Length: 162
Image 1 (cartoon, rainbow, N blue to C red):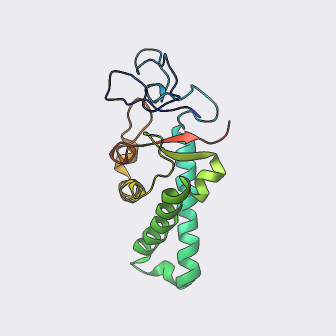
Image 2: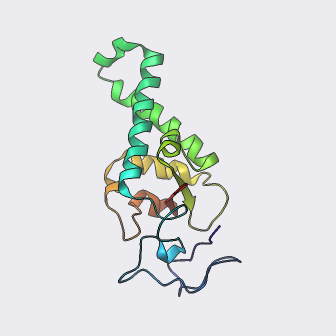
C-alpha cells in the first residue's frame, strides 16, 4: 500500500515505506500524484463519475429508509427532505468513519482515505459528510479531484478496485 506525501511540504514522503521520486502536481501529473497515488487502478484517485454514482446510491438508500420508517404517506410531507437528509447522514457518516466507505461506495468501487494514511477516517467523517450534504463543497474541486469537503477533512477518495 502506497504512503501519501504531504502536499504542503517539499515533497518528501510522510511515513516509512513511502514511494520515492513522486513528483508534485504540475504539468502532466495525474490526480493524486502529490499524495503518492498511482495514475490508474486500485489506489488511484477516484473520478467524479464514480463519486457521483456512490453518493446517488446512498441518497436513494436514505429515501428508502425514510419511507420504510415513516411510510409512503410521508412523500407529501413538507419535512420529508429533512428526514431523508438525516437518514442519508447516518448511512454515510457511520460507515465512512469506521470502514472508509458507504454502501454506494462499495457498489462503485471507491473508498475514503486519510491523506496521512491513518487506518480509519474517524471523526473526520462528520465534517466531511456535513459539507458533502451542502452540495456546493464537493462540486468545487482541486487538481486531485478533492472537493472542499475532502480538503477540510484531510481525506481523498480512491478507487478500491481496478
